[in-house]
Image (tube, rainbow, N blue to C red; front, side, top):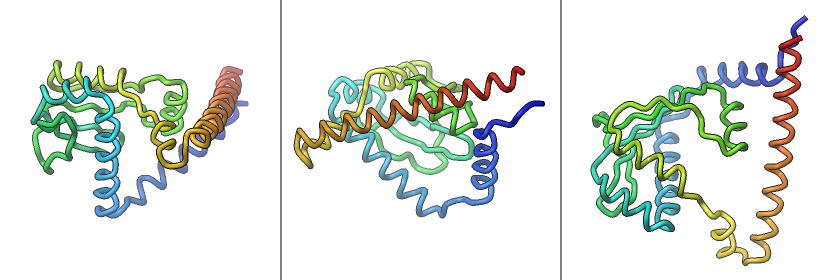
Length: 182
């Protein structure tokens, strides 16, 4: 008798809730504005990333996952801004993995999710370079607020929590796969 994984139960609940509850447009708008601010903060710490984006000024990238999407335009300053609604994208990146739990596991493993790429090949190469080379040093940013020692301690705790979560998810996914094969 095949046993259903608890992850598939959570996934089914997530899917039903996501389909029936849509956040108000103003919430989506504000979240996207905050994402742009965060991305620009991270980009400003990497001059090579900004130089690469400067060469792509005016190009629009649309990132999609399920029914969520965000359109970003490269600015002449080498940063990102939200593109105007309805603009024709130069590049569309669609995350093909529908499961949020699988995406979380891939993120914890530092794996890239499956992505369908449509559009400008050079821009896609630049976006790939950014994904591969630009990292947010959260511990460094935190140290500016709470000091080096406290930030380092918080970083260690966060790494332990992520490690434990990674181990937990790995064990659960392996157990789920074993049950599916029996």
